[in-house]
Image (tube, rainbow, N blue to C red; front, side):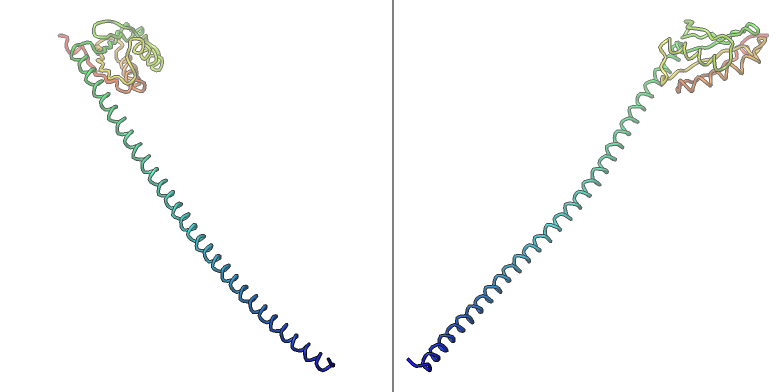
Length: 210
């Protein structure tokens, strides 16, 4: 075999190698493109899933906001219902106490307070019906109010009870003009503690003949 034949054979071999390399590069490019397409598809799928998750999260947040608003509305309704029931119960209790107070008054067993004059040593005599339950000596209006409150509490009167009280005094007795204003102030002050305390005033001198 001469040199010319060797060179020709080598050239043919080189052509074969180039063809093989060409197809190798071609197939590698195709596989790369396919892999990229798969990756792009996976990326698009992931992005779509992410978008769906974001939308679901937004919906969940909206539902949570709606649930919170519904909860607050429900709590308001519950509170309004409780306030209404409490008001209704209070009204019923107040009505019952008013009826009891009126019944005591009609039976003459209600509270009675009489201004008992003895010049400067006057006092307030306290009765439950005809039964004496205590007396309040002449003092400052604050001390007299406190003493009257103690008498009422010690005799079973409650601070939300309807108390219909009759206050009697003789306007013609000596010293009444000084004792009466203090007595009236005591009866008015007692209402700060006994909120349903109501009193009427009777000047017994108008029933006496001259």
